[in-house]
Every structure is written in structure tokens, then in C-alpha cells.
Amino acid sequence: CGAIPDALLESELFGYEGGAFTGAKASGKPGIFEMAEGGTIFLDEIGDMPLNLQVKVLRVLQEKTVQHIGSAKEIPVDVRVIAATNQDLSAKIKAGTFREDLFYRLNVIPLTIPPLRERKEDIPLLVHFLCSKYAQILNREMKGLSKDALDLLYQYDWPGNIRELENAIEYAINYTFDGGIINASSLPRWLSQPKPQTTDTSTEQRSEREKIKSLLQTNGKSLEAKRQIAEFLGISLATLYRKLNKYGL
Figure 1 (tube, rainbow, N blue to C red):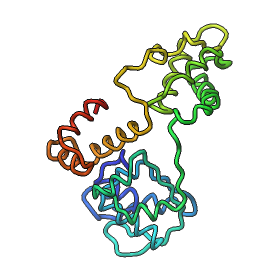
Figure 2: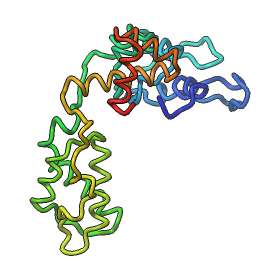
Figure 3: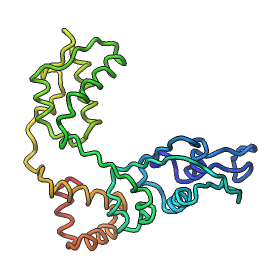
Figure 4: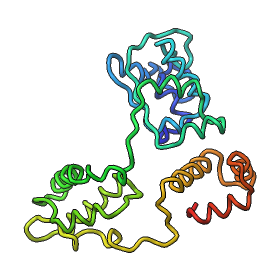
């Protein structure tokens, strides 16, 4: 939902009739909901969907029908919808940028995937998968990790989550030459660098940082937006600026 421009997202999701707008195919086009008939549609980055389309998605979930752009005909659809986001939808609801009714309609079976730093027991399995993936891409024969390399991966907090781990493994495979075993020396140097003193890894402050980051993404970074964010958080504008500086935002 975040990768497709707003002007195109509606036609991609719901389809259109021939001649419905400039540049439309004369034959029209089915939308993704129709194409997923009998199957599953995965709406990634649902938190970035514009409000006018949120209404239409809610209608599909409620009525089990879609309408092409340029048509009043109801087309029945039978699909399972999975939606994902890394944003704080509760904050977006309070900010008025995500519909509360859509949130509750989507939140039937919520699945929360903890960040990698909270499930480090998954690292060996993820590394095994990533080694297999990049060994094939880079045409290298890999046998795994040494204990010192694995210990280094466990010690790191992974602020970039799985993507950061993936980058580290791809880097390591490029720098592993003998025996196909990744050693600590093959891993990126930033894994073993000391953490900056300004970094606070407490759960409460990580949560506060993510909330402020989400509000900035939602409201923007203008002075007026920051005033609104400060008011929403119940703090002064000066305090907000101190927190922005502290969290590197």
C-alpha cells in the first residue's frame, strides 16, 4: 500500500471499466480483490493507505463486494485478507489518519511479530535460511557459522531487524573464502563496535521513540506538526525537541 501511488492504488485494488479515466484500457481491468477470488490478498503497509481508500476496503470487508471505478455494478468476492504494518495504528487513529472501524474490522486475528532483539533464539534458524539463500545467489558453498560468529550475532541488538541480519549475512558470505564457515572476522565490523552512549535500550524509551517516529511519519516535521505532536503527547514543544535530539529523529 505504500509502494503504489495513491492515484493508482484504487484502480489496482478495485479495477476499472473501460474509459473510466484518461489512460484506462478500453477493455477495463479487474482489481486485485477480484484476482484473489477464492484465495488470499496480502495488504502490506496498510498504515500508509489513504483515508479515502480505507473506506472502500472497509466496505469490501463488510459487504464482500467490489465496484470497478466507473461502474455501479456490485461484484461479489470471496477472499481472505491479511494486512500488515510496522506503524502504531493506535497513534494513527488518534491522529485521525487511520479509520478506527477499519482497524477493528482487520484486527480479527492479530499476530504480533516481536523485533529480532526480543527473539534471539530465532537467529540460528534465520541464519541457516539466509546462508542457503545467498550461497545460491553468490554461487558459494557455505557450511554455517562458527561459535564466535554466532555469539557476536547474539550480542547485537538488531535495530534494523531481519533486514539488518540479512545484510550482515550477505556481507559475511562475500568475505568468507576458506572452508565455507563464517567466522567473526567475516562479519561486518559494526556488529562488534561499542554502542553509543546516547543509545538507551530500555523498553520504555524504545516505545517512546517509536511512538514519536510514527507521529512524525503521520503528521510531518513542520513546526505546526511538531506543535500538534507535543500537544498530543502532553509535553511542551521544547521537551519534544529534546526528545527528537535524544532519539536522533
